[in-house]
Length: 255
Ligand code: SF4
Image (cartoon, rainbow, N blue to C red; front, side, top):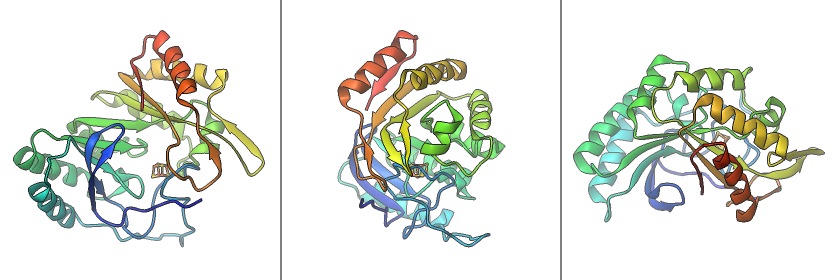
């Protein structure tokens, strides 16, 4: 099924379900996806085979700041959010921490009302400079699509071994507001049924949200084309999942 890439460093601003009017920042290549996950629902498509030790061409710190400065000074309407997302995991950019620092300075100068938001899979949070940069932003949203390792392997295909163990350790160390986002979906991939909406999955997720002391959980489902044929979860079902999460004393939103 057709997917799409962000063909620029700065995208939008565009209306987003979760962020309002959002100016996107893409720290990844503009001609292909590069990520340390390979989510079966990724709107940028599945990962391409790359040679071992492949080094992607990423926008430099200077380019990102220059492009963002122009956008913030020329947009008709100041954005509600400056959102780091794009063609892969933003925190794998080698200058991520320096970029965050300068984006906050730019935001303070040109658009003080805009929140700086990072959507991340938290795989780089064990690095002190990434942890500290993420603690500087207004909103950091951590991806967690299951609390069961086999389901994570099927949905997210993380490159990192022991991803879940590391995720728990890293989120517990994070001192900012802990916002978790969980994508619910169903499908059959390579003959294997994937469904993270079962009672077992929801109970395991709730236990993990509690263990992490999540401040807020966003639940959502597929809204755009996916690289594999997957089924979206209806708003009614998301509401019922949200009610179970809320009954466990966790703040939850459907987006
Ligand atoms: S972490 Fe995000 S960019 Fe990476 S594969 Fe998953 S959905 Fe795509």
